[in-house]
Image 1 (cartoon, helix red, strand yellow):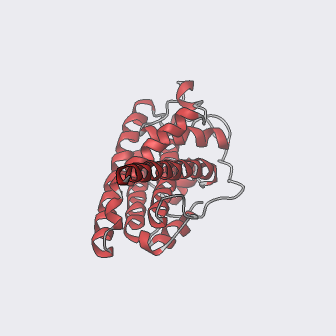
Image 2 (cartoon, helix red, strand yellow):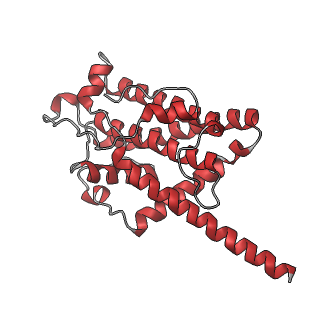
Length: 242
């Protein structure tokens, strides 16, 4: 009897955990088109005198600082309603870091001159693919851009979220230990993601003087306030959106 109840408890707990991860994956997908992205012209105005690699270094440093702030401050905020069987603080960290890293990936594609074609939703899909697979997008390979937000994408997102959930468990420790560990781990993982994406983008980069005239990126109808994400979860900055 006890064994049967234990098995039932484990089964229900696993189902709730999967539901929570699915909820987070759906929220990340929904939020992606709302992330404000600076185009190359805006970035060059904000960081005058820098070449592509120097500018990319600046973006990575800012995102790493922001994700480490999120890792250190999860106990102070709740970005989302509580998903099933998912602590609010951990859900906030996962979605917060995802937004920071998606913004970084989109702006790195701008810096290396490989903006994916299409509208806002299509580009967001491409950046979600880049984030979930930890690689750059090659505009010359349509299959890397036109990935549909179907079962495969959601499965990849769930796998990525599970990795983040495991690595962020130290944040559920007492605050001082969890804050220190979470900050270091988030900073490290954001830098590692950026290094992988940049390695791919360098292979297909287009020099700035060879780029065609690109239209400004459209603003999302209901943009996420990136600065608020960091301020709500700690203190830090991603830089201005425009």
